[in-house]
Amino acid sequence: MIRGLREIEPYVAGSQPQGKRIIKLNTNENAYPPSPKVADALKAFDSADLRKYSTLTQEELRQSLSAHLGVAADQIILGNGSDDILSMAFLAFFNNDEPILFPDLTYGFYKVWANLYDIAYREVPLTSQFEIAPSDYQTLNGGLVVANPNAPTGIYKPLDELEKIIQANQDVVVIIDEAYINFGGKTALPLLEKYKNVFITRTFSKDASLAGLRVGYGVGSPELIKVIEAVKNSLNPYAVDSIAEKLALAAVDDWDYYSNNCQKIMEIRDWFTKELAAIGFEVLPSSANFVLVKPTLAAQELFQYLQTKNIYVRYFPRVERIKDYLRISIGRQEEMEKVIMIIQEVVS
Image 1 (tube, helix red, strand yellow):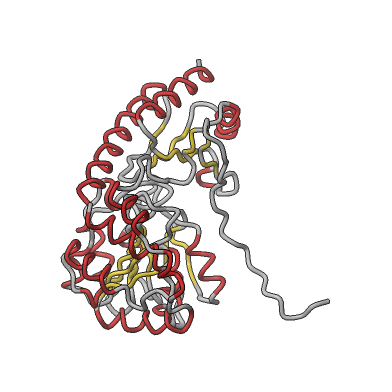
Image 2 (cartoon, rainbow, N blue to C red):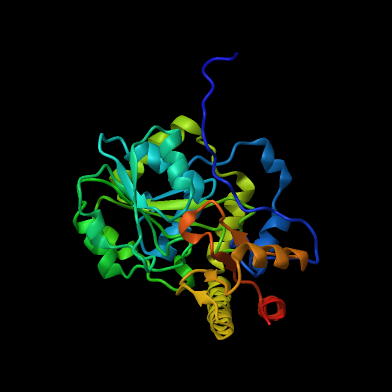
């Protein structure tokens, strides 16, 4: 027997079915391709540069994000996707005896990181309406993690209610995961001026159509950035590769393109929500690029039927509170019209 092996229950990502005739709505990828400027930047990339390591601080990308977000460049850290940023944030900021807090129904990686890094945690139940109640977070803790909009519910917490949570917890770090913020919510970035303990994470995977590139970033006070940079440089100083840096820079420089796409996705989401409601499905109010849906038939039955039609959505049979729900990413209009047509076949 081999001693010393770590036992960990890993995060389970959505499946990645292959094929050109499928409708893939299970991992919240953007329905539209990256900006043409990203494609141009990829074509122009000199492969000879790959013999060198990437930059350590991605200064050009940080400056571009600084201008785009309206924060100082020394308030930004880049990483290999927001998962990388969040993982480092857990290591950097959660070093207290008290448990960290996050909702019982949220991004599944939070629990994995807490277990992996031996960080005590407590899952705070969402309300019966799947809402975060600020009063539930006014207790002694070692830090907080709040996804806003939340996943997999898609529900957005208004900034005045979010600020109540922050006000009550100014002696610990509050991480706000804004992976889906550009699909309908207001960013918490303005709160950084008032609260030095807030750390916001973002990704290029959702709104910027670059899930396959793996670039994410965190924004916080210079004090927090120094701490997380020390963790980054203790793990992987070259976390963002040269190609990713160039392509992410091109994405930021063409943000109008992405803003238009996000607006289209929001309009399709709202149309799709109304169509599902008309069939009798329960749909949680979403500010993300997905909806959480309770069908009029068994979730597993609909999940399996959709797969026979090459339509892939997300089903959570092991998560008790949403085992009767399906999470459906928002695709293009013609894709969502087909989904509605197929659902009508099985419920009629």
